[in-house]
Length: 278
Image (cartoon, rainbow, N blue to C red; front, side, top):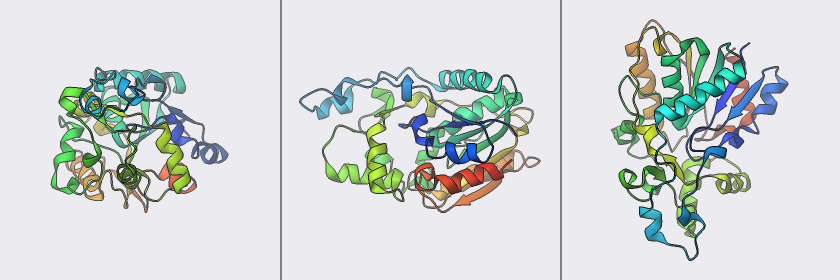
């Protein structure tokens, strides 16, 4: 069995897998969670987040300290992490949400490093299509993330949440977008660990997919049917496009009745699914 490399999505960090890893290890699967570029130990927080008094104008206009992080940089970092963890042997990569485009780039460029590409309610963009394009399709119209974003990403270089606000309604909507089926106490703790800026460059990057690259890698999509961040219709579109492009290597699909964050709401069940994939 290959080693598992777990990659979080935007605004989160490797910490979000802490409830899942014990289940995986208990089942005999070595698992390592890593931080994506611009997140976790690689995050850089904007000044407005801690400045007093609170400055709403700065929230909307300050250029992000991670504005220079793009898909190339994110893929380079994750590739180095995979090589270190796997010792050159292929690993199974489980990518959540906006880590999907990074996994896709790596599986295309170095398919020999990826034994199994697992997309957990993640962006799985088609060839030469940026992940950001899927936030504007009809299937995404009722998603809850876009209305929460602050500022103009073209100006700030980031998809930004206002984590300094005391607006109770805003924080409630943030909870609904990510943690709708998570215990409120745990969700509050997770919210306190979020970073405000997701690097827009990761969402704007594209990868040309080939039969010998990404198209040759075994892949599974774990759909979350209660997801209010990446809506089920968007998830279905990813799978349909992938299977149309590479019909000889169809996507395996597993369904969880979960929100966007099953690693917190049902870590045991999620671990069981991951282990079952082999």
